[in-house]
Every structure is written in structure tokens, then in C-alpha cells.
Image 1 (tube, rainbow, N blue to C red):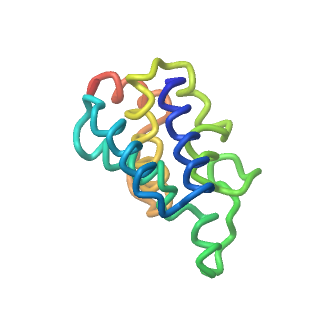
Image 2 (image 1 turned 180 degrees about the horizontal axis):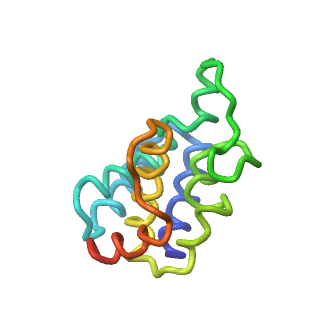
Image 3 (image 1 turned 60 degrees about the horizontal axis):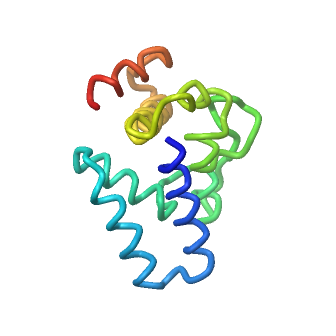
Length: 135
């Protein structure tokens, strides 16, 4: 988990320094591609590294009039790092090892999307079990 977190933070830092740098982009993608996960999880990690998900904070940055408060905690602005790492609701997954981090993050993102669309979703206590099944 810690190395996956570090990888995402390095990606964010390198994007701030040179967002169009093909070398840093290539290095990040190479690290993600080496992970032994299904392609949809790798794609999720890639988009997370690029912060390209339609979080409420990103939607506001695109001038979409939306309340950017997190639906999970109703306390902070909904950024990707908040959804997957900082939100009190997401911290339940933070004790798992690196191999489970990507799966848990993906399930949390899916759960968030299903909640927003008012679709049937998993309970938080099921997220860890479902991630373990896939790993």
C-alpha cells in the first residue's frame, strides 16, 4: 500500500513540475503496467495518477456548477485523494498491504459512482472482502 501511495504522489509531483514530460509519463505507466492486476485496475491507477476522474472538485474546475462537498463525510471537498485516502469513510481500507490498495481504491471509486447514480452498491465492510477475492 505504501509504495502505491508513494507512486501516486510521485506522479502528482512530477505532473506539477512538467505535466507534458513524456519521460515522466512513460516512467509512471511502466510502473503501473508491471503490476499484476487486471487491465481495468491498471487503467484506474493510470487515471488516478493523472487525476482525470470526474470528482466534484475536478468538475468545478471545469466550471460545472456543483456542490463539491464529499457525499461520504459531508465535510471536505471531493478530490480523488480525499475519496480514496483522506475521507473518514475511505480510511477503512488504509491498513491493507500494497497488493490490495489498488483493488480497494477501485472498489471505493465504483461505490462512489454507484452512490451518485443511486444504484445498488456494496457496504463498506464488503469492499475489503471483494478486493481480497480479486487479488
